[in-house]
Structures are given as structure tokens and as C-alpha cells.
Image (tube, rainbow, N blue to C red):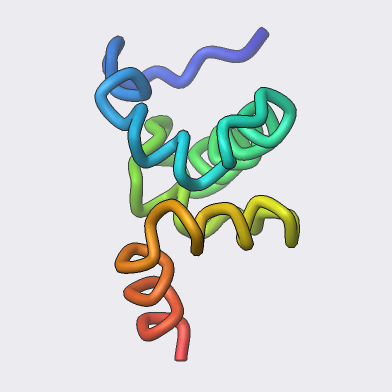
Length: 83
């Protein structure tokens, strides 16, 4: 188990709505999303998971479709930033 030295306890809990919409409420997708963000946090030296960092982690097609249905404004905003 790896620890992110700058990650504040409760940060992920505070992002529960975001995480739910991003993963469609599927535990496997949530695990992949958090694991991917943790790897990026270690690689970039930030040692913390933020919503901005989570936005950099790709999700599977089904989760992306679920996110569009449950949080359309969020999905559209992310697409505009990527364009």
C-alpha cells in the first residue's frame, strides 16, 4: 500500500458526488480512477489527489456515458477544455 504524503484525509469523501458521477457508482471504476490518480500524483510529485488530477485519468466508455447522463454540465465543460 502506497501513501500519498500530501493527500489530506477526507478529500475523497468531500468529492463523493463528483466520484459517483464520474464512475456511475461502480466500485471497479472508482478503484481504477483513484488508482490512476494516485499514480499520476506520485509521478508529478504532488502526492495528492485533486479533482483536477482526477480529470486527467481516462475512464472507460460506459462510465463516460453514465457521467453524461448524470452530470451533463460537468461532462460538457470537460469536453470544451479538451478541445
